[in-house]
Length: 267
Image (cartoon, rainbow, N blue to C red; front, side):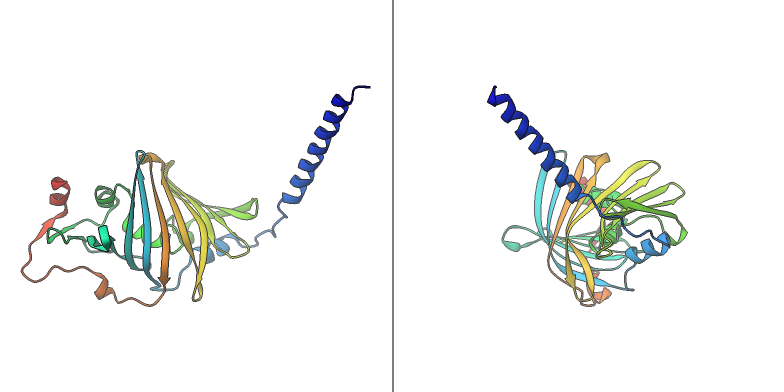
């Protein structure tokens, strides 16, 4: 009798058995069926009125294979107020940005003592950073409530996907898929489509408890249309209330404010 084929057969059978046992152990348990998917999704996307978040952010931007990393001081108030201070070498201020809904985006370049104003739009942010994202979508994203169609006006359905609820929101040309952890109620991923094209693929990797809120600590945003990505790592984040008047950049009296297009033209 040849022992080698016999031993090989026994080992192969043992490996198959172990793989089968592992698959059984890893199979997700059925989640309770949601009796009100719309209410469940709206609760996951909700945020206390005028919630604030500030701290340090490590930012990595990749565009067409080129990666750049920055340290930034940030402060924002949900859902439409943002201030960023991009730091340069030795933590020297390199670029200041502030945006509020209904007002111009303000850009200040300390090294040139130059002030610019222009639309608070995805196009402006792309020209400044390489990342095509509405500044207020950034505010929502770092709060763990990614932008999408209004849940109150959307058709919503949910089904189990692994250990999460995968929920779909549709309204007109907008469609959003969100994955929600049943254990924490946190959104772990969001896919947003407009007119059938992917806008953002947002993935939350880790979370931190800050006061009464469970907020993301590591965020990866993929922009398939532009072959770009934005990774954000929040550090020393706090939820203390912020004064909007102190977040908005304002040029000193008598200082000329140039159109944002002038900044783009000088690049």
